[in-house]
Amino acid sequence: MELDSLYQEVILDHYKRPQNKSLASNPTIQVHHVNTSCGDEVTLNLHFKGERVENITWDAVGCSISQASHSVMSELLKGKSAEEALSLVEEFQRMLQSKGSDLGNEEHLQDGVAFAGVSKFPARVKCALLGWMAFKDALQQSITKAN
Amino acid sequence: MKSALNVDQIKSEFPIFNRLVRGENRLIYLDSAATSQKPLSVLDAERDFYTKHNAAAHRGAHQLAEEATELFEGARAKVATFLNASSENEIIFTKSATESINLVAYSIGNAKPGSKFHLKAGDRIVVSEMEHHANLIPWQELAARTGAELSWFGVTDDGRLDLSNLDSLINEKTKMVALTHQSNVLGTINDFNGDLVKLRAQIKAVGALFLIDACQSVPHLKVDVQELGCDFLTFSGHKAVGPTGVGVLWGRSELLDEMPPFLTGGSMIENVTMQSATYLPAPKRFEAGVPNMAQAVGLGAALDYLDKVSLTAIHEHEVALTKQALDGLKSIRGLSIVGPTDVKNRGAVISFTVEGVHPHDLGQALDQYGIAVRTGHHCAWPLMRRFKVVATTRASFYLYNDQSDVVALVEGVDRARKYFMER
Image (cartoon, rainbow over all chains, first blue to last red; front, top):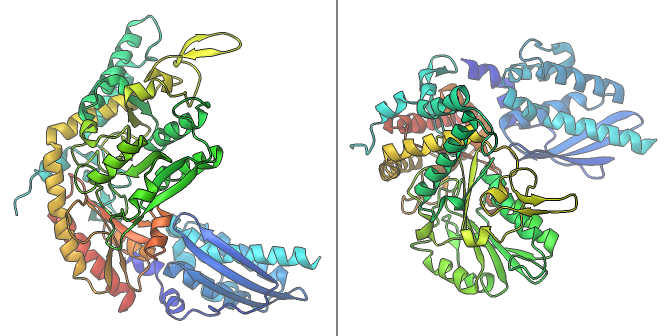
């Protein structure tokens, strides 16, 4: 049924066993983002060193889609260069805004492609993007800070 | 159990129930606290206005303008009768209840020193922790503009207004009190004629103005402004089987006629020069611009419809559904009701949480079964914090819901819980 296309195993796994869900101390930048339509919140700590994403940790309250998405995002983007990370964020965002037409490139997005089904549920796209937008904000602030 | 209403007949008068949702599911609409569905008679009344009588009310020398004026003012008379107002001049049409509350708050803010409406540092505005944002933020802003202090009643663990600090909140400093008649989250009915009569008496004794936000009560039970003993009362059309884009502010004539205007422009003036203007008495003073005529006419038809079905019967029907739903939901593992768990002074709005399942996920699953509920903070963020939840799932019932809808809800919630917790 359609519900399974939204709540794929990968998503429920990340929801039940979230990765990097514990804020590491002394981040380069900490950001806090809120989904004003539902009240879900995420705090994200970014450690950024020598043009590279050294670590991403987070803490959040929210639905399974948002929690799993934070988890997948932190796994995928850790260790990437700023340029690679931004490009992946854009690719993920494109997939989510495609209304189901873009299934995502698994080589690039890895577990992230499990969220392709979310793009058919307009009310949930924000849930899946919350953490990624928080990361993008933190990254841009880190780059500004470094310059 | 025999219902107080013939729901099959009622449903047949609401065209939306002819459609299916998410595939082949019948629509189980449990979100009337957000907005109600509309009967054909309301849609016809709006359409008739546009197809036969459309013109700018209160203007123009032609037949259509005359008919439009009669229909618009006829709707005002219907609202006045519905609320048992002393006169139709006490009924102001706005675009929403939100605008109605802002109208009162901005008008008070516009009052000059010397006016009995003037607010200043040392004065107090009182609300409660169970207010919808629409009956909180306008008062926060008014307090900030005038220097008055904003205070509030808390909410008890079982979702009732906490009156333990009544004397320190309602005293000679208090100038304005704004409270909800029924919480849009908890379902609690604040019975100002019963349990809360002491509160009402104290507001009157200290001479404060008293506004009731009746958005959740007017559509569901008989509301009589004389009995309630308030000074202002607001509700919106779209929650009362009426159209969107129309709200009502009722106020006592002697107050309205002395209050400064909020929105200014055409229709509300007595005389205008290049330097200044004088204003008409209420209601026109508060209805600048060409009014929302078709929507007001639609609201008139909506109130006719509710009268025909009978609000007493609607309330009785909803109490029965609420009891059935509370009993059913309480049997689900991990489910907690946020609000009163019995039906005494309680409307047909039930908020709940299910351990381990976020409301958004629960709402999504219910949607797949054709059940429409609301999830989130319900525009009552402080109340969510009070109950230490981020969000709840809310089911709300109306005249077109029946026992099978409640059964579907209870089964749906349990099925969704298993989907997320036992997969």
